[in-house]
Length: 192
Image (tube, rainbow, N blue to C red; front, top):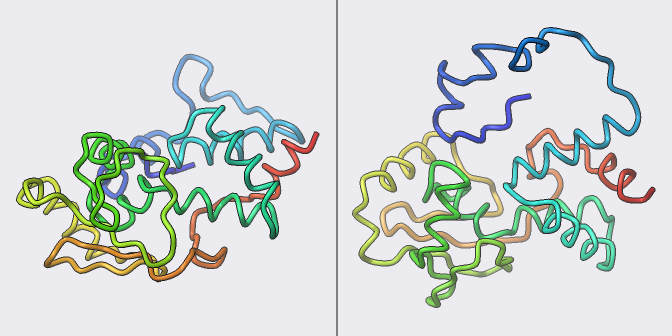
């Protein structure tokens, strides 16, 4: 499945999933039927790779979602969408999740005029996300913002592309998360 992990490359014909629709290696073309646990595990692995998380980080996010109020699957997806690395990517300040993590960890992102260098920081409604002054003229950054203008941003975010600032208008709802994720499979996997 195409997870858009390589940034702009995934929107072109150079995407590996488009070139070759089978697994790599000598036995990649063999058909296997996945059932039950395997389907749930693949769904969890897919979400982990989409958001660029390790197993322990993902498990802690799941446990936090279980303890909070609301439907566990929707709360989990909402927490994953609210991560700062995801918000920076969705606002278009980076072309891939890894690039957004690097921007954050190098201290180029400010949340409410305070430097935040933790990619897993959870933003809240009303937070203002901006870039440091010295990084605003970066050609890669400006190209990423132009590509995002063409694709659009989610309705729970607002972008001022001229000033290179964004804000969180509201918390993301399940309807605004357009990724092909079946959160119920993940809940069933961890419930065993």
